[in-house]
Image 1 (spheres, rainbow, N blue to C red):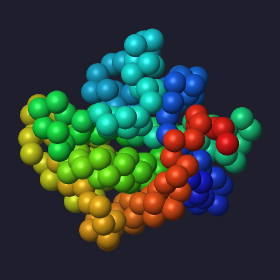
Image 2 (cartoon, helix red, strand yellow):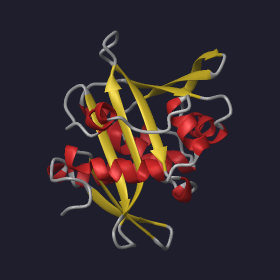
Image 3 (cartoon, helix red, strand yellow):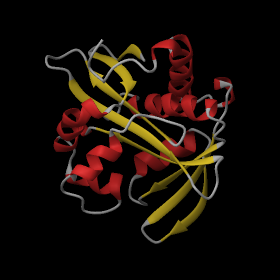
Length: 204
């Protein structure tokens, strides 16, 4: 989809996830800390099943979208992050969203960049909002959601539910560091839209 540079040493390739990316997904999962895995799955997941791999690397369609990132500064390219959404059956204008950034790459702004990429796709698909489930101890994700304009709709024990409004106009997102990353993603996605369906992550 697009290539961009974050900081001085992170040459980032951002592309649609496809079935050929299962090995990237497994490698990325193996590099996650136990805490990051717990925050992503809200439970003690220690491995990805074959059905998980099939689901998480399925071609994007009207129901879901998955976008991943690789660090092209190293050889072979290193998995960095993945973001995906699935449209809700109960509300066709809403989709559940999740983003995972490998621990070594947290703090670079990759999370909001990938959220911006999938938000661009979701807005084009007439999805109006993302729903995100966040552990109360995941302060980084809580701050990220708030900085993007999300609000809390439920705070049950062990889980906070955020509603993040989506916009077709990138400038409608807050003028925060995270919001500016979303704007960057929108601009790059719009510029490279014809390439969105090209090949698996890591291939040109």
